[in-house]
Image (cartoon, rainbow, N blue to C red; front, side, top):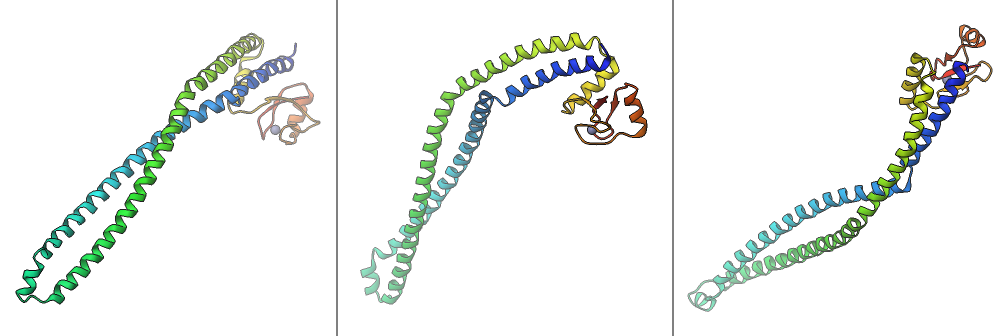
Length: 232
Ligand SMILES: [Zn+2]
């Protein structure tokens, strides 16, 4: 068997290995497992965000409580209003003061409403997330097991082909095989191709005069553009 024939045979087995490897990467089992894992990671980040938001809301409540206490303190001035007015203090001063308090209360009320809405929104978001995380966690072990099984099947298949490749490799020139493996690791495939006339069938580059002669004499040459092995 010529070197080209041996390489082609090796490449044929290698293409089956490639298919098996791709089968795992494109499998539904892997897709579902990766999706679930990524969802659970993101959910944990989301929970951290909700916790930070809850802290922020808590300090909002503290701030509003402080404002309420300040207003209550000011209201104490009105407890003895009768006496104060009798003592000759201008009633218009207390009227203005009462108006300003009423405005402060109004704005406090509106801030309480808006904070309450934010809290409700966070609670709803948290409840929804919790429900969906629990469901995802329940489903996760089965998805993980299915992916593991799929991976094991693929590995068994791949091992058999790798054995076949190792035995085929014994007949191939060591340097040629090294070059082949280097190209394979660069995801070039197929690696050895039959020339279309004097043109690389994969990238369309024409051969130089020297290469044409080499190819015609039966040598395996390399495409100067895509570096594949080419033969006549
Ligand atoms: Zn090429």
